[in-house]
Image 1 (cartoon, rainbow, N blue to C red):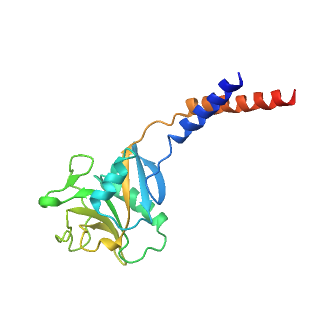
Image 2: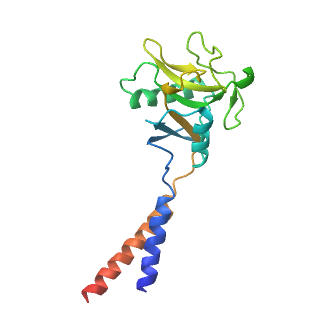
Image 3: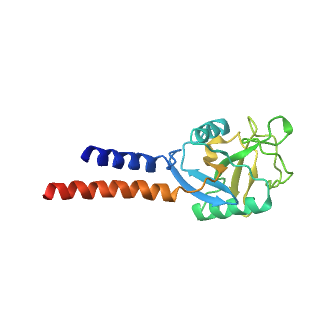
Length: 189
């Protein structure tokens, strides 16, 4: 009985651990309109392709920003995360303009929505990656980055939000607690 209860506790704790996201340095996760967004900040500058590869290991892609509402949501979260951003703070997202056409990392259809800084895109994006770029006086807007990769301080990922498995989690957690209580009771007798 004791081994069964300990096994239940171990399975419960392992299952709880599968819902965490270990993508990189500092992460913040938010839900919006059926998607889960992860903001990975404080990273060593990396290429757009490397950011996409890092996200794919956890089921994300670089975020597709297909509407003004979605763009406003992302900017609101960036504003909260970077309360005093340094000039030219940049984070990759899923747009890529390699070859002159915008494509999305997750294969989403380009809707025509963009939010470029003035004089962007200017063709500086080596490889075609696009970043959310903070500039004093203009705020957060899009930039085809690549020439100044040292300005990249993270990336924004997106995946379809999955329902939170609360009943199953609580059942597994409850089983583990009951097992511990049973063990403690046996030791007392």
